[in-house]
Image (cartoon, rainbow, N blue to C red; front, side, top):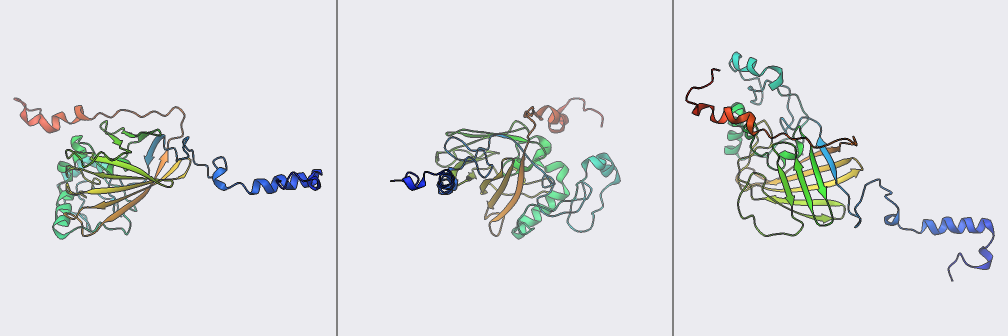
Length: 289
Protein backbone atom coordinates (compact mmCIF):
# COMPACT_ATOMS: atom_id res chain seq x y z
CA UNK A 1 0.00 0.00 0.00
CA UNK A 2 1.40 3.43 -0.90
CA UNK A 3 2.42 5.42 2.18
CA UNK A 4 -0.10 8.15 1.31
CA UNK A 5 -3.13 5.86 1.53
CA UNK A 6 -2.99 4.66 5.16
CA UNK A 7 -5.81 5.73 7.49
CA UNK A 8 -3.29 7.42 9.76
CA UNK A 9 -2.36 9.77 6.91
CA UNK A 10 -5.82 11.15 6.19
CA UNK A 11 -5.70 14.34 8.21
CA UNK A 12 -5.22 17.51 6.21
CA UNK A 13 -1.80 18.24 7.64
CA UNK A 14 -0.45 14.81 6.96
CA UNK A 15 -1.89 14.91 3.44
CA UNK A 16 0.06 18.09 2.70
CA UNK A 17 3.25 16.61 4.08
CA UNK A 18 2.67 13.45 2.08
CA UNK A 19 2.17 15.41 -1.12
CA UNK A 20 5.37 17.35 -0.56
CA UNK A 21 7.24 14.15 0.19
CA UNK A 22 5.89 12.51 -2.95
CA UNK A 23 6.90 15.49 -5.11
CA UNK A 24 10.39 15.41 -3.64
CA UNK A 25 10.79 11.86 -4.91
CA UNK A 26 10.22 12.88 -8.56
CA UNK A 27 13.59 12.85 -10.37
CA UNK A 28 14.83 16.15 -11.82
CA UNK A 29 14.57 14.72 -15.32
CA UNK A 30 10.81 14.62 -14.83
CA UNK A 31 10.54 18.33 -14.10
CA UNK A 32 9.06 20.54 -16.79
CA UNK A 33 12.19 22.23 -18.20
CA UNK A 34 13.70 22.90 -14.79
CA UNK A 35 16.91 24.09 -16.51
CA UNK A 36 15.05 26.53 -18.76
CA UNK A 37 16.37 24.87 -21.91
CA UNK A 38 13.76 24.31 -24.64
CA UNK A 39 13.57 20.67 -25.66
CA UNK A 40 12.16 18.58 -28.46
CA UNK A 41 9.57 15.84 -27.99
CA UNK A 42 12.40 13.34 -27.42
CA UNK A 43 13.90 15.51 -24.68
CA UNK A 44 16.91 16.77 -26.65
CA UNK A 45 17.83 20.48 -26.49
CA UNK A 46 15.95 22.45 -29.14
CA UNK A 47 18.36 24.65 -31.14
CA UNK A 48 15.72 25.99 -33.53
CA UNK A 49 16.15 29.73 -34.03
CA UNK A 50 18.40 32.51 -35.33
CA UNK A 51 21.83 32.72 -33.69
CA UNK A 52 24.84 35.00 -33.88
CA UNK A 53 28.26 35.32 -32.26
CA UNK A 54 29.36 38.49 -30.48
CA UNK A 55 32.93 39.70 -30.07
CA UNK A 56 35.63 40.26 -32.67
CA UNK A 57 36.76 36.75 -33.61
CA UNK A 58 35.39 37.45 -37.08
CA UNK A 59 38.51 39.56 -37.67
CA UNK A 60 41.05 37.44 -35.80
CA UNK A 61 40.48 34.37 -33.60
CA UNK A 62 43.72 34.95 -31.68
CA UNK A 63 44.10 37.77 -29.12
CA UNK A 64 44.96 41.00 -30.95
CA UNK A 65 45.09 44.77 -30.69
CA UNK A 66 43.37 47.25 -33.00
CA UNK A 67 45.27 47.80 -36.24
CA UNK A 68 44.90 48.99 -39.83
CA UNK A 69 43.43 46.39 -42.15
CA UNK A 70 46.49 46.28 -44.39
CA UNK A 71 49.05 46.29 -41.57
CA UNK A 72 48.22 42.97 -40.01
CA UNK A 73 51.63 41.56 -39.14
CA UNK A 74 52.06 40.67 -35.47
CA UNK A 75 54.09 43.04 -33.35
CA UNK A 76 54.80 46.63 -34.47
CA UNK A 77 52.56 48.11 -37.13
CA UNK A 78 53.97 47.36 -40.56
CA UNK A 79 54.31 50.41 -42.86
CA UNK A 80 52.01 50.28 -45.87
CA UNK A 81 51.41 52.84 -48.59
CA UNK A 82 49.35 55.72 -47.24
CA UNK A 83 47.01 55.59 -50.23
CA UNK A 84 46.08 51.98 -49.48
CA UNK A 85 45.36 52.71 -45.83
CA UNK A 86 43.25 55.75 -46.71
CA UNK A 87 41.31 53.69 -49.24
CA UNK A 88 40.05 51.47 -46.42
CA UNK A 89 39.98 54.00 -43.59
CA UNK A 90 38.27 53.08 -40.32
CA UNK A 91 35.78 50.86 -42.13
CA UNK A 92 38.52 48.41 -43.03
CA UNK A 93 40.38 48.56 -39.72
CA UNK A 94 40.54 45.70 -37.24
CA UNK A 95 39.08 46.18 -33.73
CA UNK A 96 40.89 44.62 -30.76
CA UNK A 97 39.73 41.27 -29.45
CA UNK A 98 40.46 38.80 -26.65
CA UNK A 99 40.44 35.89 -29.07
CA UNK A 100 38.60 32.56 -28.88
CA UNK A 101 41.56 30.18 -29.20
CA UNK A 102 41.94 28.13 -26.03
CA UNK A 103 45.46 28.91 -24.81
CA UNK A 104 45.62 32.01 -26.99
CA UNK A 105 47.84 30.77 -29.82
CA UNK A 106 47.34 28.50 -32.83
CA UNK A 107 50.09 25.80 -32.86
CA UNK A 108 51.30 26.24 -36.43
CA UNK A 109 54.08 24.20 -37.97
CA UNK A 110 56.98 26.52 -38.96
CA UNK A 111 56.22 26.56 -42.68
CA UNK A 112 52.50 27.05 -42.06
CA UNK A 113 53.22 29.96 -39.71
CA UNK A 114 55.25 31.64 -42.44
CA UNK A 115 52.29 31.17 -44.79
CA UNK A 116 49.93 32.67 -42.18
CA UNK A 117 52.10 35.78 -41.86
CA UNK A 118 52.27 36.14 -45.64
CA UNK A 119 48.49 35.78 -45.81
CA UNK A 120 48.13 38.61 -43.30
CA UNK A 121 50.33 40.91 -45.33
CA UNK A 122 48.28 40.23 -48.48
CA UNK A 123 44.92 39.82 -46.75
CA UNK A 124 43.06 42.27 -49.00
CA UNK A 125 43.79 40.12 -52.06
CA UNK A 126 43.68 36.60 -50.61
CA UNK A 127 40.90 36.36 -48.04
CA UNK A 128 38.27 34.05 -49.61
CA UNK A 129 35.50 36.13 -48.01
CA UNK A 130 36.45 39.14 -50.14
CA UNK A 131 35.68 37.08 -53.24
CA UNK A 132 32.36 35.78 -51.84
CA UNK A 133 33.59 32.23 -51.51
CA UNK A 134 31.83 30.09 -48.90
CA UNK A 135 33.31 30.59 -45.40
CA UNK A 136 33.87 26.99 -44.32
CA UNK A 137 33.72 25.51 -40.83
CA UNK A 138 34.06 26.78 -38.16
CA UNK A 139 34.33 30.32 -39.60
CA UNK A 140 30.70 30.42 -40.71
CA UNK A 141 29.55 30.21 -37.09
CA UNK A 142 31.27 33.35 -35.76
CA UNK A 143 31.07 35.69 -38.73
CA UNK A 144 29.42 39.09 -38.39
CA UNK A 145 26.19 37.79 -39.94
CA UNK A 146 23.60 35.50 -38.27
CA UNK A 147 22.57 31.97 -39.13
CA UNK A 148 19.45 29.89 -38.53
CA UNK A 149 19.16 26.33 -37.24
CA UNK A 150 16.31 24.10 -38.38
CA UNK A 151 16.06 21.02 -36.18
CA UNK A 152 13.67 18.11 -36.00
CA UNK A 153 13.94 14.57 -34.66
CA UNK A 154 15.35 13.42 -38.01
CA UNK A 155 17.09 16.50 -39.44
CA UNK A 156 19.59 19.20 -38.42
CA UNK A 157 20.09 21.95 -40.98
CA UNK A 158 21.96 25.28 -40.75
CA UNK A 159 21.35 28.21 -43.12
CA UNK A 160 23.84 31.09 -43.05
CA UNK A 161 23.06 34.61 -44.15
CA UNK A 162 26.51 35.05 -45.67
CA UNK A 163 26.59 33.99 -49.35
CA UNK A 164 23.62 31.65 -48.89
CA UNK A 165 25.88 29.04 -47.28
CA UNK A 166 24.14 25.94 -45.87
CA UNK A 167 25.02 22.79 -43.95
CA UNK A 168 22.96 19.62 -43.88
CA UNK A 169 24.23 17.83 -40.78
CA UNK A 170 23.69 14.11 -41.31
CA UNK A 171 22.36 12.21 -38.29
CA UNK A 172 23.38 8.91 -39.89
CA UNK A 173 26.93 8.60 -41.21
CA UNK A 174 26.80 8.38 -45.03
CA UNK A 175 30.45 7.33 -45.24
CA UNK A 176 33.51 9.32 -46.37
CA UNK A 177 32.89 12.58 -48.28
CA UNK A 178 32.58 11.94 -52.00
CA UNK A 179 34.26 15.24 -52.94
CA UNK A 180 36.09 18.03 -51.15
CA UNK A 181 34.09 21.23 -50.80
CA UNK A 182 34.07 24.65 -49.17
CA UNK A 183 31.70 23.65 -46.33
CA UNK A 184 32.76 20.01 -46.09
CA UNK A 185 30.57 17.16 -44.91
CA UNK A 186 29.05 17.21 -41.41
CA UNK A 187 27.85 14.23 -39.37
CA UNK A 188 26.23 14.78 -35.97
CA UNK A 189 25.30 12.75 -32.92
CA UNK A 190 24.19 13.41 -29.36
CA UNK A 191 26.37 12.98 -26.28
CA UNK A 192 23.79 13.55 -23.55
CA UNK A 193 22.72 17.21 -24.06
CA UNK A 194 25.63 18.16 -26.32
CA UNK A 195 25.29 17.94 -30.11
CA UNK A 196 28.64 16.78 -31.50
CA UNK A 197 29.41 17.31 -35.20
CA UNK A 198 32.33 15.80 -37.12
CA UNK A 199 33.15 17.90 -40.18
CA UNK A 200 35.64 16.89 -42.88
CA UNK A 201 36.08 16.82 -46.65
CA UNK A 202 37.23 20.44 -47.01
CA UNK A 203 38.96 21.82 -50.08
CA UNK A 204 41.66 23.57 -48.03
CA UNK A 205 40.91 27.03 -49.44
CA UNK A 206 38.97 28.61 -46.56
CA UNK A 207 40.42 30.69 -43.73
CA UNK A 208 39.48 30.84 -40.06
CA UNK A 209 39.23 34.66 -40.03
CA UNK A 210 40.39 37.85 -41.76
CA UNK A 211 43.87 37.53 -40.24
CA UNK A 212 45.17 34.89 -42.63
CA UNK A 213 44.77 31.92 -40.30
CA UNK A 214 44.49 28.94 -42.62
CA UNK A 215 44.47 25.14 -42.94
CA UNK A 216 44.88 22.40 -45.53
CA UNK A 217 42.42 19.96 -47.07
CA UNK A 218 43.35 17.49 -44.31
CA UNK A 219 41.42 19.58 -41.76
CA UNK A 220 38.97 17.74 -39.52
CA UNK A 221 36.74 19.72 -37.18
CA UNK A 222 34.90 18.39 -34.13
CA UNK A 223 32.18 20.80 -33.03
CA UNK A 224 30.37 20.68 -29.69
CA UNK A 225 27.10 22.60 -29.38
CA UNK A 226 25.86 22.89 -25.78
CA UNK A 227 22.91 25.02 -24.66
CA UNK A 228 23.70 27.04 -21.52
CA UNK A 229 20.16 28.40 -21.27
CA UNK A 230 17.21 29.16 -23.52
CA UNK A 231 19.10 31.83 -25.48
CA UNK A 232 22.79 30.89 -25.21
CA UNK A 233 24.93 28.20 -26.81
CA UNK A 234 28.47 27.28 -25.83
CA UNK A 235 30.20 26.58 -29.13
CA UNK A 236 33.48 24.68 -29.22
CA UNK A 237 35.42 23.45 -32.23
CA UNK A 238 38.59 21.37 -32.19
CA UNK A 239 40.81 21.46 -35.28
CA UNK A 240 43.08 18.62 -36.40
CA UNK A 241 45.32 19.08 -39.44
CA UNK A 242 48.77 17.43 -39.35
CA UNK A 243 49.78 19.31 -42.50
CA UNK A 244 49.35 22.68 -40.79
CA UNK A 245 49.35 22.31 -36.99
CA UNK A 246 51.67 20.58 -34.54
CA UNK A 247 48.73 19.35 -32.43
CA UNK A 248 44.93 19.65 -32.20
CA UNK A 249 43.65 22.97 -30.88
CA UNK A 250 40.27 24.38 -29.86
CA UNK A 251 38.22 27.55 -30.09
CA UNK A 252 35.48 28.35 -27.57
CA UNK A 253 32.85 31.09 -27.82
CA UNK A 254 29.20 31.86 -27.10
CA UNK A 255 26.33 32.14 -29.56
CA UNK A 256 23.28 34.26 -28.80
CA UNK A 257 19.70 33.78 -29.91
CA UNK A 258 17.86 36.63 -31.61
CA UNK A 259 14.78 36.89 -29.39
CA UNK A 260 12.96 39.43 -31.57
CA UNK A 261 9.74 37.62 -32.60
CA UNK A 262 9.91 39.42 -35.96
CA UNK A 263 13.50 38.32 -36.66
CA UNK A 264 14.12 36.74 -40.04
CA UNK A 265 17.28 35.55 -41.70
CA UNK A 266 18.26 38.02 -44.39
CA UNK A 267 19.91 37.39 -47.73
CA UNK A 268 23.46 38.39 -48.52
CA UNK A 269 24.14 36.87 -51.90
CA UNK A 270 27.37 38.70 -52.53
CA UNK A 271 28.31 37.33 -55.96
CA UNK A 272 27.14 40.46 -57.86
CA UNK A 273 29.33 42.59 -55.58
CA UNK A 274 32.55 40.83 -56.55
CA UNK A 275 32.13 40.32 -60.28
CA UNK A 276 34.16 43.40 -61.09
CA UNK A 277 36.84 42.41 -58.57
CA UNK A 278 37.18 38.93 -60.05
CA UNK A 279 36.58 39.55 -63.73
CA UNK A 280 36.98 43.27 -64.28
CA UNK A 281 40.41 42.77 -65.82
CA UNK A 282 38.76 40.85 -68.67
CA UNK A 283 36.79 43.90 -69.86
CA UNK A 284 37.75 45.14 -73.29
CA UNK A 285 37.69 48.63 -71.81
CA UNK A 286 38.51 48.48 -68.09
CA UNK A 287 36.58 50.76 -65.74
CA UNK A 288 38.82 53.63 -64.53
CA UNK A 289 39.93 53.20 -60.94
